[in-house]
Image (cartoon, rainbow, N blue to C red):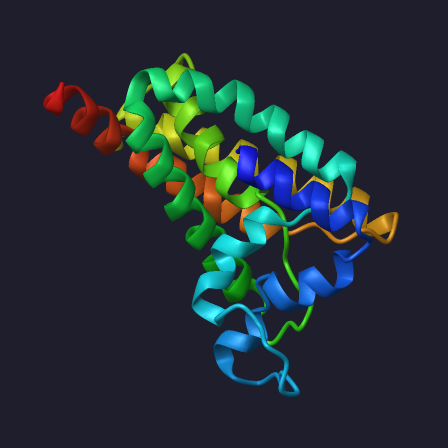
Length: 199
């Protein structure tokens, strides 16, 4: 988290946001090979899901991600351990990039920010600490219903937020948030079991 803050602040205070976003942001079209990098020295395309987490569009963007990570990360770490949080963060970054790529593989707009990776931690936190009031639906167990409700709520929140920000002409990577959250839901239980099995 400290590295993210330091890199983001350096980029913001040296006014290199656009340059950094192009060189280190996740650009879906780079994976499909449909974008000309014009000889620029860029972060390798397969590493940009990670480098993008170090870059933010402004202090508000950085602050929101750090707040989300500070609270849910600390609590999630109690359940899955520090290595579990690191694994979750890294997998979340790639899941977020993958979801953004699936949503618009030809996009040349850079995706930056740690919110996709942070969404994985929020997803795990929601599953690990949320109270399940779900009941089984036919052959579908209550746990699966609970996960489906969490996912549906996160999708709805991100779609509404995306529409609100779009109206203000601000881009938000809703698909990335959803992909990260899904990774958190999928990995929460295995990481919890792994952490306590090795303890």
